[in-house]
Image: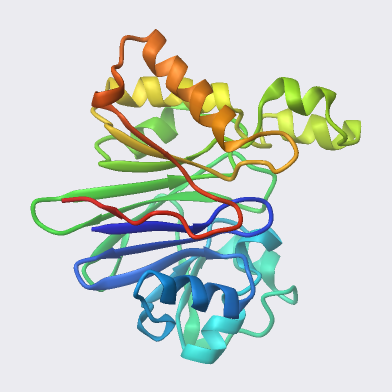
Length: 265
């Protein structure tokens, strides 16, 4: 299994996953050419993508999805409420042959990859995270971003994962004193907003106890966070809970450049 956070942040999100010969994008929130070039930079071709999984309908997650579907006949997978929310918006007209509707909480296959969409708390029509299983022995990847908080159901959904991309959107103090207007700050800090560095760290401590040993921090705010701050906040929480650095691999996804390729062996 291979995973690469091509881009991750409010300026656009696109994540690449390959397992069992199946190549997937999780979200495509940048223009089609940017996604194509990002794939090319890691030795992949947009023509070989087997499906685009949509977490929710916000523009930074769907901007290029319709273009890629029309250009390369790539199926787009989303739940019914998300399709309705995208209808007539910037995703444009998606060919009927490329429309795939899944039910949140029920797994399905794309090629040999098993995909489970699970509900996440965000101010969208019906936002989801994903787990993707593939290969033998079993390898499992999970993505949960744009989440206001982490609950027990989400922890259960990603239990047993080898690698998790989790949102670490903001530092609470930076957000509170930063330039955002109060209503936007309140939205981000709400239960259906975005996850803070500290909350991400606490979730990873819980998941370490369940066996997780590698995570990537994603969807960092440009105004209310830095890569160094997110990393050090989460790493400090792991250390405070007696989790040695060498026992937990921690990375950070970039907003404006292609991230590293992770291989789950």
